[in-house]
Amino acid sequence: MTPSEPAALAEKDAKRSAPAAGSPAAERLAALRAELARRGVEGFLVPRADEHQGEYVPASALRLAWLTGFNGSAGMAAVLPEAAAIFIDGRYTLQVHTEVDTGLFTARHVTEEPLSGWLTETLKPGQRLGFDPWLHTEAQIRRLEKTVGALGAELVALAGNPLDAVWRDQPAPPQAAILPHDLRYAGVESAEKRESLGKGLADKGVAAAVITLPDSIAWLLNVRGGDVERSPLPLSFALLHADGGVEWFVDGAKVGDALVRHLGNAVSIEAPERLAEALDRLGAQGAKVLADPATAARWVFERLRAAGAEVVAGADPCLLPKACKNETELAGTRTAHRRDGVALARFLHWLDGEAEAGRPLTEMAVAGRLAALRGENGELRDLSFDTIAGSGPNGAIVHYRVSEESDRALQAGELFLCDSGAQYPDGTTDVTRTVAIGTPSAEMCERFTLVLKGHIALAMARFPKGTSGSQLDSLARYALWQHGLDYDHGTGHGVGSYLNVHEGPQRISKVPNSVALEPGMIVSNEPGYYKTDAYGIRIENLVAVVESPRGPGEERDMLAFETLTLAPIDRRLIQPELLNADEIAWIDAYHKRVRETLASQLEGAAQDWLEAATAPLGA
Image (cartoon, rainbow, N blue to C red):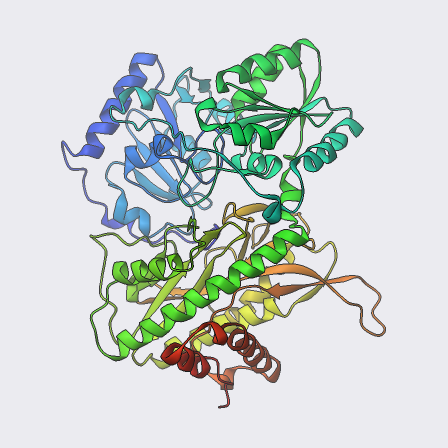
């Protein structure tokens, strides 16, 4: 599943249609503008975010989708009396034009045409631009304050979200039960994590840290929940104290007796509305309190400052230890990928057979079949994201989501891109395979092989400790660059352990990132190529960062990648003459490992198919 990165905005704004009078989108926009006028502000910002600032939000917080129709995982709308815009990244430059009435909302690429530029064009001196301080981070608002102030306008924190006042059928907040995450999966007791991180706070003279990211809290307390789709998150807030104790602000209806016993006496359960009181108490003590400006809501910072606390801006202390998986978590993810690999092999065998027989297949039917096969292993808890099943031109939409309106048949001579993943109690998977339906064109094979070369270059990389993903990104693009080609998303994102399929702080991307790759981190390796209105190609495996033994004469400690994903790469799309000997050796060795790991768990025709699909390239 691709991470975000800048891209050129598709030239579809020229095709904007005029807004349909009386359409639901027009009525909602008009209602919001009326509510803003009632509150004495001219404008308002609507991010795709909830109070926790994570990628995964419940239905009750999908305000951007309700207002605009946009269903991507990142974006923001800005509304003024005479203008409105929606800001998206390189994954969604095509999708936004199919979901949003661009006669109402001008579609702008967030990097090439940022919010600051739009405000400079449209926000007038003296106007008041409102925002919900729960839905923006401290860092975001600090940047906006500079932009808005320079225009002679005012940025105003609103009490209560005006959009909620006009969203009449807004869903209720989720109340899924929270369960212990067993030590056989977590590997380290919650008490040990809390005490270690608490000592780190004490060493810096910090009394407490405000934890607002649901996956950080889930990792810290060894719990999992179900408040959002596709990721086992309980929505809550926490205060981690220097003595290792935790105040957990969570809806008590989600907490059962078994969970209380699991947490122990050092974790107190508090009602969510008591967070303000707890921050005020720390402020009254003049305490030093850590909060992450990149992830915590502006409200948190303002409350602490108003109460008299000394706010220490710093990274969420859970981020790095959560990213560096322990041996139990790594063993679990290897098991999860073996289990997932069997389902993928059965799926790819079925897909080949159906296509060869000329049976009608649609994107929705194929995605459903894959989900069903994953479910047959008995360990599936959920998908890790909505399956991206793009045939032909739909494959060129990087984060395509099939619907009844967009569903199309898989056709001979086309490519089918399937990006999917699963949540198992021992690990999270994410894999993309691009498959030929019938006979592919020479161009398809050439570009698939160029993408494969980039994938192999990254998979084979050895690099010194201290290297960031940004320093490795060009390895995956080099072969494409030599042919004047590229892709407009990151090459790799971090992945959680039965947590978020997108996890930081590490990533592999053109976008600068100073976080060094460390042993135990899991990242995706997913270069691609997309030809608009024709086809898409992506090859994605998950890899773990591991130590690489020193060879003779080597002076530096080196790291490398262990490939976790086990699924054949379509040999029909590979042009061996474009590969060098090392690349051919890598693909043959990878396929041998896939075959030896999975074959014994398949039967009959599926086993025969796997043997052929993983045969050496020269065979």
